[in-house]
Image (cartoon, rainbow, N blue to C red):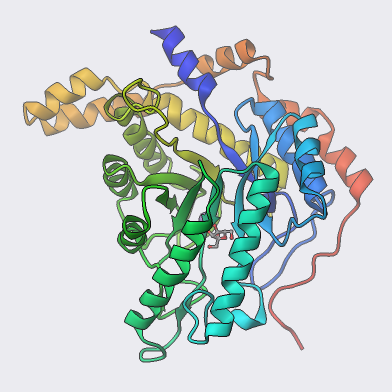
Length: 396
Ligand code: PSV
Ligand code: MN
């Protein structure tokens, strides 16, 4: 039993985002962090450190053009030499003047063509990096009622996404993110999981929904969305982070650990129901567990490591749910007994088990302590200096 638990925990994988290692901010200010990664090489170096300390973060997602290089084979080799691999490719369809009114949803065909060209460039990069995930988030939307036509925009998206899907490398997947608002404030073209799901259904099996925990209105039951998508075979992956108000990008599990636990509970329950590694489901897609965070005022390495560890802790707790007793209580209609089974698992102190796991995996038993005492932050600050970040709200 314990061996099985440890094996499952050792197999856990969380991808970290390159953009979480560089300076980032809000629209008010980007604070410069001493030693923050200045380019993609340093971001990979930082992601590799997080893997070295945690043992469960073996890949890093790239964002194009932020992480653009001339030679992706060289980047790939560099990552592999550091002990990690290049993960999901994230196009950028929100930082060009042309995209003021949208990208694939833009009323002007010329802008839609530009967006498509960038998406195809990202697919080409997938070939070069060996990445099997194209992770799409669109900032498209409008600010005012009547500004553009919902249905026309939907049709434009369908057309654009079809072209992207048709160009996907074999054995790769398209993950589609949704978000109810921001930067658009009246409507967004992919506002919720249902819209993303509907697009994915039309595209084909390799199009799946990506659930970013920061992209829901207050009160949304995210674990139910997860369960539904899992049951439909369309849960492509996660962007873990934590929100209190909106897309806050805070450390995973920092403000709502119960929600994180409940999400992992759905994963654990479905291990048995939709086991990805069962012989009768060869090649069934894995769920991509990824972090999407950009830290504004906290130390970047420590924040990322904490998020990875919080995912590990939530998963370990969820693995403690007594599934047989839960099914029996649910079947008997015993609401509170069933609820207590959840509460018991959530209250389990899994820290001793995780220390044992880490010793077995050859990583520090206390990764945060190892990070703090290892001098990594100081070395980076000395080598990289403090890069002026600029940006933020315009002032006079
Ligand atoms: C913006 O909301 C966002 O956080 C999306 O979630 C993307 O995944 C990410 O930025 C990177 O583009
Ligand atoms: Mn995201």
